[in-house]
Length: 119
Image (cartoon, rainbow, N blue to C red):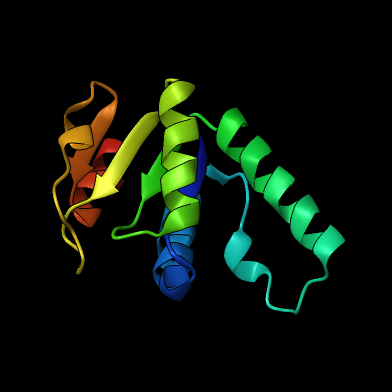
């Protein structure tokens, strides 16, 4: 399955760990934003933003690591609008239930449940 992982930048280690585990189970991570470590100029930022937007549109599912931030909330909106499966990790620090978690394609899971569901 093609998967995008959304979180705030400070949770990049968690995103990489989840990515590694999902890839071991045969999934494809469509954009590894946590691998971008150098300073970017304005044009590079634009290209990355477009790449991430395209990745969210093309993926089959999105994994959200709360609490997220501006970018990940934008990505969740795009994913919902495109009717993607959204898996939000509820066993992480910063988890807060939202009324939007009751939308039909939104699934609250623990990290272990995520791996089980996406086997």
